[in-house]
Length: 479
Length: 151
Image 1 (cartoon, chains in turn yellow, blue):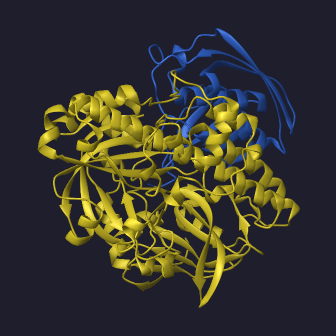
Image 2 (tube, chains in turn brown, purple):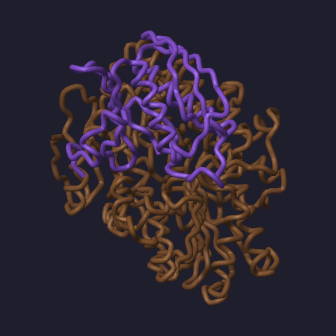
């Protein structure tokens, strides 16, 4: 078992040992430890610590769980001169992320029509295993524009408003994307998947603000009690998966070429300064932009669905974007490390950026509050809105947790759901769920997940984000 | 969850694949009397994860030809290529035939059909096969592999 030393109530250290170049640092509570220690996630944190050029600790957020390569909830920074970049530190679903929309509607105004709204959303947004758009297929040249310009392309093409862009991480467009470094295979997979939800844990959820923890912050984020909200959670679909696969093959060779010793092949990587490393970052940026465009288009159909069901115009609905943030990405950022300003490549594999007030990358609207952080829970419980803090910036390179984390495997979840109608059970609790397949809904039952409230408690405790509001679901579409 | 607790049937041989516990994702144990059979079982396991494999008909054929650095990488590539075929036009295999297999090359054909949500139940979506804990080992009476899928 991996050794752990308690630092304080919410921080645990994996001491540097063997081939580790730095220590591991895990943010969690005493109560969460036993379940974290059951699987291989702490070993994965220690494995990441062996990679060349790592700066600071190999970090794990409170929702850490067993992934492949990096643990889910893993964050690691690398030096551009002697550090590496690893597709396994980003994952297959490049820029899987979440966005939150607010409305001017109060909960009472929508209660009449939730079922209608969920059905309309379900009809407008292709979802489920192998979902694709039948209404349009992108040409190769358009697809390349999407990869270069991300959500900006979508807005220019009529999906959403220019004002949306300011409320997306990196303005919805990661610089340096090179579509020519994305394979034909990847482009083929992406051409009719733009504007689709996919399956698994991806969803669109209509909910309401059920509790405010910090009234002034909530007001500045445009949130009020009883307000109807919408969350979109999806990523870069098959295009991103293929980019990851393609570059894992490149990196397996590169690791050998540059003499990088790997504790797990899924951690294969290349120096950031090498052609392989640079090419991966440029291709990854393309996939990340595809994901920003994907969420932007889905947002457009969410707005259309609301307009159709409530027979209201955009101004009255006020479906504004609060924020859109990536969970899986590697980005070059400038941070202060031991008093010195340094450029670093920060991997997040299932973590949310949580920049503090006045950080230059935080949009103008949130200069005083800090960047909004959205932490979705499972479909039966609640999600949380937080804001980034100064402490997150110094402790975790401005990162925090991203979700609840699974408690049961999908197999166990299906067993638990056997003989029950999950859709009916949720409907009795006032949550309308539509899924493309029964299997996904059963696999995604509430009890399959840890209570996200437990995860979110650790975050303000450790100071790596501040709680603003809690949202409860009213209607969900699942893939 | 304890990784040592097997969740599924203790008599998997006839099927050639079985799920083993992995909390966030999905892991398979695969068997084959020989390596081509193990790869064929991997293909069937993938189709069976995405839909009810018995609902698929043998209507179309896809030829697959792959090259990789070693046989473990080849197994990952094979599964990911089948996912690619599914992504580009919905093709899912019912019958898998590995024609030739060396440490670095695979040739196979797959018979199956285009996924149709009205006839084929949607089960679990798979993003990719990964290299995490990947291994192929020779046993007393054949071959065994472990592969973790990202869901």
